[in-house]
Image (tube, rainbow, N blue to C red; front, side, top):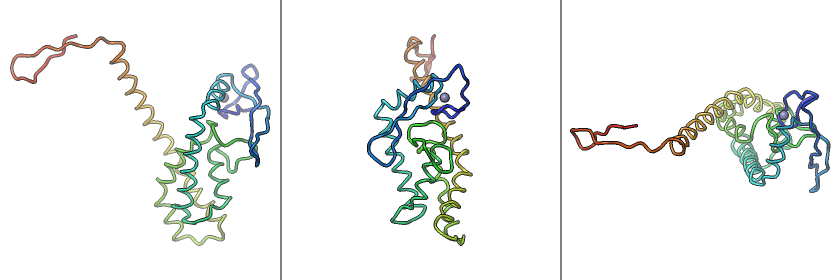
Length: 198
Ligand SMILES: [Zn+2]
């Protein structure tokens, strides 16, 4: 059994059940019971409440969509199979079924997908120019293999950058909140030579 939010294993004492809206074709959602870790449900509820996250997700998805259509496939009409494959990547599956593709942490974020598409552009261009594709589906699946082969590398790099940013942010906060401002005194000699005094 796995957690609906994070996709990790769910053990009996940790299970919390919540009705989750799933949008099919229509504008009104249907509600289904889903199992979560307690902490994951808290985050999930917080995030779904947060319209900003939803709006950002929608924006990120639209960037992914148009980059794939205009830059990778270079077509005017987006093939439904490409949409399925890209949304599948969002939830870490070949093609999504029965899961909402938005605001779920397993799989890859649309930001990661977009960065990977950009990173792979030269490879996908080369494939588009040199490979003889049987049909459109074959072409999309071929290009998605290139994307899938590179996405973990990109994810790691993005996470590393984020960790570094958090560390810098922490150092900044420590510098402003906890420690008193350090005084400095002028050292003998040139105008710009100062010594820190704790
Ligand atoms: Zn979880």
